[in-house]
Image (cartoon, rainbow, N blue to C red):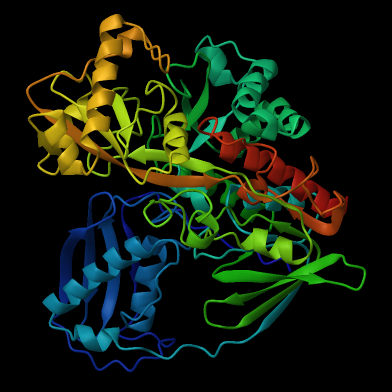
Length: 589
C-alpha cells in the first residue's frame, strides 16, 4: 500500500480556501442560505493570542475562509496537512456547513476557528444554527490493509520506527489515534539530550558517553538496565545528528538545571527553559521525512487488539475509526508506540492521593493502549512506583523554573533541597502524597516570578505564619516549626537538612507572608512493556514475542528510575529505540 500523500506546510500566517462557485458539488447540504456579500473580518481569542479570520460570502455561499493571523501551537493548530488551520477552512467551504469535524488532538484550535466563522456568518446575515445542523456523512465502511510493518502511534517513537522501517524497504502504515501526529512530543518543550554535539563544542562544553551514562545511572539507580541505557547513551550523538539531518533545527544547549555542571539539553528553534509547545519543530520534519519515503498514515484510528496466529506470532492489529468502522491491518510485524498513560486516571491511581487533582498536558488519548494490548498477548510489564511529577503554580508559573525559596507540602513540611532539578522536588512531594504544595515567600524573595505571584489578588497572604497556615488549611504549628527551622538554617548559612547552597538560603522574614499554591502536573510515565535492547517485546520468560516490537513511553522500563533525569531524555531515547524497532521489524529480526 504505497499511497504518496502530499504534505502541506503552511508556515505563513495566511491560510485560505476559496470556493469555485456558489456551491460545491461534493456538499451534501442543501444550500438555501442568504448572505450580504462581502468579506467580514473577525478576531477571536486563540490558544496563545488572538486569531483573525476573513470570511468571504456571495449572496448564497461561503466562498472563502482565510486565517490571516494566529498564534496557535506549531504542529497542533497549524503546520501539517491535517491541522485545523489547514483543514477546517476547506471543510467549511466544501460542505457549506459549520458541522465539520474537530481535529482530534487540536480541539481548542478547531473551536476557535469555527467560532470565528460563526461570528462572520452572523455578521453577514446568515443563519448560524442552520449551518450548524447535522449533515449527512458517508456510510462507515470496514477496511482491511496488508502491509509489512504497522506502527501503532505517530509520536516521536512511532515516526522514528516508521521512517527506519520504510528506509529498510518495508511497506509501512501508521495508525494514529488523533487527527494529527506528534503525541506528547508536539506539546513538549522540544528538547533533545545528547553529548558530543557540534552545539556543545561551539559553546566550549566537554562531555562524553561516560559522563552522560554516569549521570543518568546515578539518577535511575537499580531500576536502570545498564545495557539498555548504554546503548542509548553511546548512540545519542548519532540519534541527534539523524534528527538534525532530517531538518530539526537546534538553536542552543542548556543545563538540565543550573546546579548541574554539564549542558546537554538541546533546544529547538524558539525553545529554551521550562517552556512547552515547541515539539512541533521536531515532529514536522520527521513527518516530512516519513512522507518522503512513501509512508502512509490512517488518522483517528484507535487500535485495540493484536492479531495472533496459531503459532502465537503477532501478525497484525485491529482497531476502530472515529466513525465506528473497523480497521484490520495484516502485517509481518507490529510496533507499539502509543505513548504513556498520564491521561488514564485509573492507571495513574497507584501513584499518589492526588490522582483526581493532577494536571497533564499530554493528549487525552494517552491512556496506555499499547501496554494493555501487549499484556493481552502475554507481554511482560514493569510497574514503576513513580511518574514524572512537578508542582507548579497555574497563575504565575512558580515551581517549573528554578525558584529556590521555601517549598512545603500540604502538611507544612519541607521535603527537599529546593535548589535542585524541579522534578526532584516534585518527586519528593509526590512521595509525601501531597495533593498540593506551597511556596512560602516574603517581599525579600529574589525571583521575579515569585514577585509577580505575590502581586496577584488570588495569592493568599497574611500578617503572620499562623494566620497564613489557617487560610491555606495547613497545620499552623507544623508550618511555624518549618519556617523557624528554615530561618535558623539561613542564619547559619548551612542547610543541615537538605544541603541547599548557602547563597540560595534566603530567610522567610517580613511584614507580610505569602503562600503560592503549587499543583501537581504529570507528563511522563515510566511503567510499561519490557523490551530488550533490540526493541523486542518480551514475555514472562524474557523471550521475544515474535512479530512484536515497542518503543518510546510504551516501553520505558529499564531507562528510568523513580525520578525524571532531564529534559530531552524521553524524546531522544524514544527516537533511538524507535529506530531500532523499525529496522528490526522491517528485516524480521
